[in-house]
Image (tube, rainbow, N blue to C red; front, side):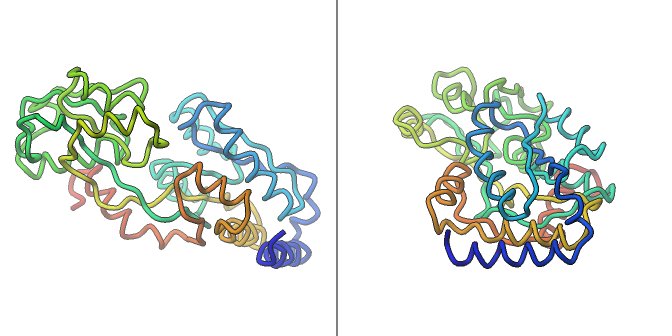
Length: 283
């Protein structure tokens, strides 16, 4: 075990000894993971992290999720999770409701991108009137909303000046553009583990627009937990810097370099941008 982790666990233990939460250590910590992966993949990626947090806190950590993003949000808003890894829609609603607050996040940020066929006539967002756009979902900032705002800035309405469909399987989006089923594909730039098939299709596509940097999903803790325990979780998560095999594997799976400490103020600038693309009159 690396030295920094030993120190982190020691600090966590000291915090727990000073907290009434220590008396509740038999209660499992419910770790809600947003359902962007199938159940098998979610367990493969996040169970080692759950085990690490259990070691750091002295409490069992139980992975839980939901069948859909909406169901996950509803459960999170009902207080079903103690620790949440969820998208910004989930986090914003949880924080606004006074249910949870951020303690850590991955880095560096990611971007959404819009791609077209390399030999297409589309050279800028302004050229996209009349196109067929395939995207992730109406709630996805990196996979829809950023492009909708860019089109709006060009005097175009994505719903009336283009035809938009949403892909049941997000990983199919670049291939739908490549085979001519759509003119434009919108998705997260780092969504895919690089593979020969994906790399090959990208040689035939061209990026026509990218979103501003989007912060990684926050790790948020329930405000029902005692402050010392929330801080302990933040320290444990903020210690993940790729210094051992477990950390390197976990970070590689999520395509991030490390996890860093964060709080709600860490999202202030991004919150303003997010509101500008989702709520009329904000920006």
